[in-house]
Image (cartoon, rainbow, N blue to C red):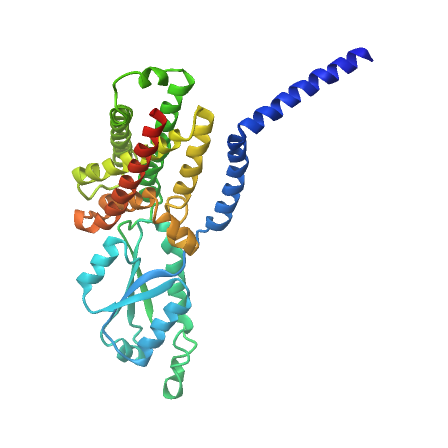
Length: 379
């Protein structure tokens, strides 16, 4: 009995010690608990491959009640959101290439005339297949329209045209990825994910290692300024980022045969602010962490949402609107668009500038915050 009593006391002592430790470092344990819940919520809302309400531009060379019914039919599928009408094919192609539009619907001349003559006119739908998952269901819905979308208009003398297999023919064309290969989207997307995870984690851990090993005190007594310390931490990781960049690009092109239609120097230029922004996140994490465990946990709270909300794992337009708003703030979303645009579409600087400017703004803000609070830790 005495041995059991002493064993109980020893067990109670270690339990008390652990509860005190948890109380002192409650932030780390809170993060460990919150991460699984955030994963469940994010996956639950975002895990959707059925992208709807995709921005669409219409080139209509025929103005008739049949055309109006056809356009309304596209809207009613919920896959196409008609945002613009134009007669300029070059403008439509430019908007599709820039990523502002996902589809071009072209209605030809004499569509109505050929329809009533039962000549089965053709409708052309061109989709941005740089994300092939996003357009598949939309193409299928468009093909289904041909069976019944004009039934309410085909009355009286035209009633004989009803109940046909199809009143018109829908031609679908997947641009920028004509074979609709998933590798054309996932392999370049892995570059974004690899850079995000590696650079954020490395910077966060490298700074907190200074505290754990006691070398931060040595930096404090040197004449080094905070900016010099930050640059010394960041520059080696920028070089590492470029090594990862070139390695992934080479694997994409030569192993997985992903086309590279654009400018490599342009992509190299664009990756620099993205690398710095990722390193800035890691540095910001390190300013509120004194251990590698906490730094890694805090870094994960950025890496996971940034990856999920970028459009890499699930189509961006398949996510709820609130998730798209958050995703548009984060750099991975914009760099994924840049790398797909340059590699698959041959996009130029002008076409990628909106996404590049968003990364630059984020980079400036996060580096400023990191420097401001890191300097306080040195003081």
